[in-house]
Amino acid sequence: MASLTLKDIKKVYPNTEPVKKPKKKKNNDEPVKEKANLQITEEGVVAVQQFSLDIADGEFIVLVGPSGCGKSTTLRMIAGLEEISGGELYIGDRLVNDVAPKDRDIAMVFQNYALYPHMTVYDNMAFALKLRHTPKAEIDKKVKEAAEILDITQYLGRKPKALSGGQRQRVAIGRAIVRNPQVLLMDEPLSNLDAKLRNQMRAEIIKLRHKINTTFIYVTHDQTEAMTLGDRIVIMKDGFIQQIGTPQEVFGHPYNLFVAGFIGTPQMNFFTGCKLVKEDGKYAVDILGKRIVLSEKQQAALSANNQQPCDITVGVRPVHIQADSQGFTGKVDVSEMMGSELHLHLNVQGLDVVAVIPTVGLDLEAHSTGKEVNFSFDPSLMHLFDAQTEKNLI
Image (tube, rainbow, N blue to C red; front, top):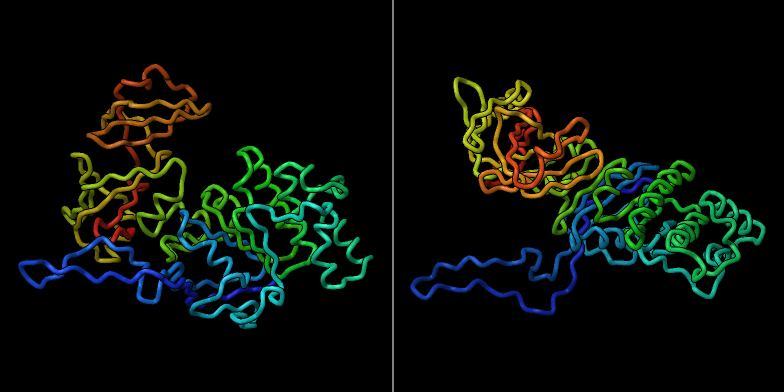
């Protein structure tokens, strides 16, 4: 195992197109504001910026975010497959910015398996050890131990084309772990699998983590994988880290509007055009024509920050919405039966609000398409985001 330290890591790809200067208005010299990609600079296209992270020995870190956010680029810089444009990368106490990939004592599992089609499973797993001139007896021992851990012993004599997707991915993982690397990097390894197999392989990776002593860095765009696998999650957007925390921390206290919308299924509901007000020394929220007084804990947090009344966006998770005859009224646009839960898409004053309602004892007819339902939510479960900065106020 090894700890890793990333200090202000940056990746810039050379830009072949000239950076356009702001246009001028014809009637005066004030520049016209243009909608520009802030990641394109005179240096080039900035894929990753100011990435700083300390990873402990044996920790399982998940980098998550939408496509193009820089998570795979970050992983490839750690692996040595991409040159680091700025900052410092340490594996243990060793600065490895200019160290070749083969000398970093890391292993990587790719999205497309990258197995040699002409080799058997055994030979695929043994290949890296043979390049290191490892004794045959030791190679045999390590390959068979890895195969047993991954439950692929019966496939050692087969070639990749005779295996299913999940079996091929296990072979790819086995090829990585036979080397006993200090760090195991995994780049969206489950994205090519169907939903059922993805769930099974997620469980296998959790088991694997407890069987081998190594530090994991895992990249995915799937927030369910991030929540179930990671000790800590690093949420990225446009090359920047948005939040680092445990799954519970990022779910229960998202740092900003982006994290709140990205983490959680179904996505958090957002009510725009709301106001944070202060009346008789108490904070309250004006939302959809009603005034809701906040909980004591929220009052204390806002007071500690000396928060002033302002325009806000209110976030409420679908699972926190409950039936309430005295609450808000919405019309059911779509009713989705999910077995133990009913997912309702409600039209509430022109907003699409999603509610997740347990079906036990529920009158399904009263919640069918076209019906009106009344609902509310616990004020203590509301998330308050500044309308300008989009940061969580609590």
